[in-house]
Image 1 (cartoon, rainbow, N blue to C red):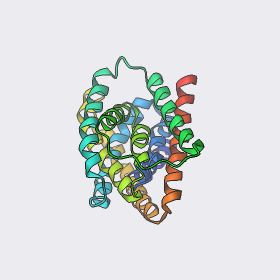
Image 2 (cartoon, rainbow, N blue to C red; image 1 turned 90 degrees about the horizontal axis):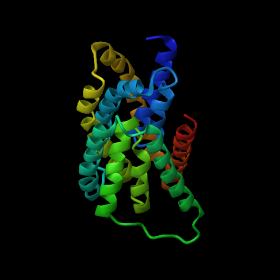
Image 3 (cartoon, rainbow, N blue to C red; image 1 turned 180 degrees about the horizontal axis):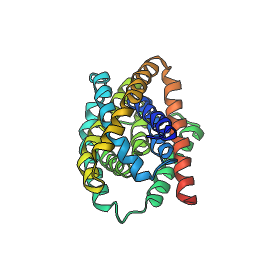
Image 4 (cartoon, helix red, strand yellow; image 1 turned 135 degrees about the vertical axis):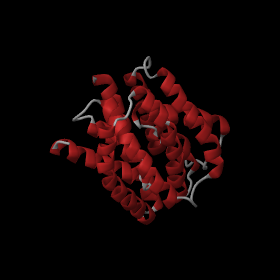
Length: 245
C-alpha cells in the first residue's frame, strides 16, 4: 500500500472509529476522503470490514445504553433499506440520492436552529421510524452515509446523549453486517482487500475508544449541537457533490 493511500486510509478508518465511539456524522467523511485516491465504490468496499470490526467494539461499549423501542422499528427497516439498495444499485443515481438526503439534512438543521418556539420531545413513531429507518439502510448501503436520515428521525426525540449514541451504534452494527453478502456479490473480496482492511483496524479501534471517551465527557447541549453541525456540513457536501459531479 503506497504511503499516501495508507495515510488517507488510516485517517478514514480513524474517522470510522470516532463515529462508532459515539460521534455521529464523523464516519460519513471516510468514503469521500478515501475517494481522493481510489474509486468511491472501491473505497466503500475497503472500509466495510473496518466498519464491521469497529462495530464489535462499539456494541460492547454501548451494550447497556440504547433505545429498545426505536431499535425494534429501525433494525428491520434498515435491513429492508439495505435489500432495496442491493436490488437498485445499478439503476439508482448516486447523485440523486445524495442531493435528496443532503436537502433533508440541511432542512432539518435550519428548522431546528431558526424556529423560535421550543417544541416538546417527540415520541417513538412507527411509521416515521419505518420510513427513515429504510432510508438509513438504503443510503448506508450506497455510500456508508446513513447518518442524516437516522438523525432526522432520532434528534427530535431528545434522548440522553449516551442512549442516542448507543442506539446509533447498535443500529449501524446490524446494518453493516447486513451489507456483507451484498457487497461480496457486487464486488467480491480477495485476500489483498482483507489484508488492507486488517492494516486499518488499529486506526479504527483507537478512534472508537477516543470517540467513546469524548462522548461521555461532552456537555449534552454541546454534544447535540456538534451532531447538528456535523449533519449540516455533511449534508451540504452531499448536495455539492450531487450538483457538481
